[in-house]
Length: 250
Image (cartoon, rainbow, N blue to C red; front, side, top):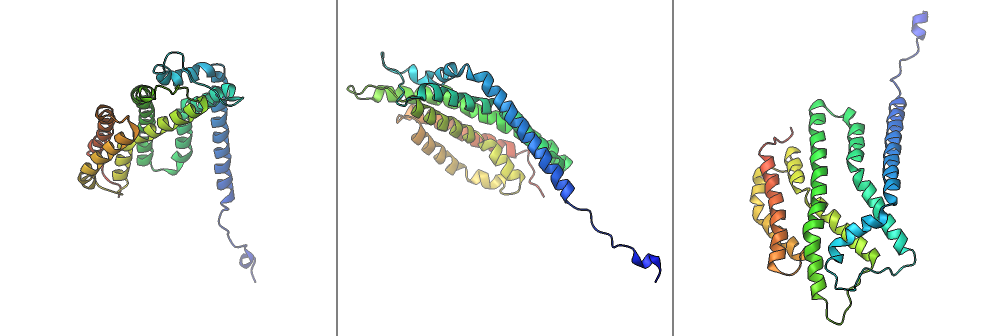
C-alpha cells in the first residue's frame, strides 16, 4: 500500500474560534456600555436632587399652597433621587448603547441592510425621546393640574416621592414607545409582514384606538382627551406616509 493511501482525512474547520471571537466582542461591548452608563451615573449622582426636582415640577406647580411631596420610607429621600439619576444615565447613554448593538450585528448584515438599519435606529431613538418630551411637557401638566383641582376640599394632596417616580417613569416610557408607531409601521411594511393597503384599511380603527388611549390617559374632559388623541392619530398617519417610500423585502 502506497504512502498516499495513508493520508489523514480532511476535517472541516472548527466553528469554536469564530464563536469565541463573537463572545469576546460581545463581552467587550457590554463592558464598554456598562462603563459609559456608570460614568454618566457618577457624573449625575451629585445632581440627583436637582434632577428629581425637575421631574417633580409638573406636579409641584399645581399643588396647593403649603403642600409638597412627602417621603414615607426612611431611605427614600436619598434613594429615590439616586434611582432617577440611574434612569437618566441609561437614557442619556441610549444612543451609544444602540450604536454598540448596531456595531455588533453589522458584520452579519448585507450591505443594503447595513445602510438601512442605522437610519432606522437613529430615527427610532429620536422618536422615543420625542415621546418622553411630549409626556413631560404636555401630558403631565394637564394630568396633574386636573388631579390637583379635583381633590376633595378635606383632602391634602401630598404624593409620595417613590410612587410619583414610579408613575412618571411608566408614563414617560409608555409615550416613548407610543411614538415608535411610525417606525413600527414602516418596518412592518419593509419586512413584508403587512402592506400599506392593509394599514390604510385599518385607519378607522387607529382613530378609534387613539381616542380610547386619550380617554384612558388624559383627564376626563373633551379638550384634554382630544389634545392627546390627535397626536397619536397623526403618528399613525406619519407612518402611513413613510410607507409610500418603502418596498417590502423579498
